[in-house]
Length: 102
Image (cartoon, rainbow, N blue to C red; front, top):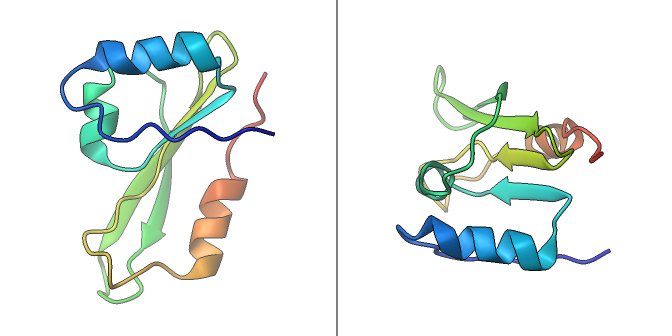
């Protein structure tokens, strides 16, 4: 198993595309909305919701998708602050809901 982190592609999606060609990932996970939106990738999104354990009624949405090439694409449910984290079981449920790469 190998893990590569690509941080801050900014507004240059071709940086991501170069990394995809080089690394040929089986799973891609975006950690925030801006990086997903700027990636230039498209996906049929299967939503995964996590309730905010600190603010009743607040829900965050992530998703998983499988592209035509079998690559799994996901975006984590983005929490608005770093000091109020999700419950461990909620994040594990999100990660375990990822489809198997093709």
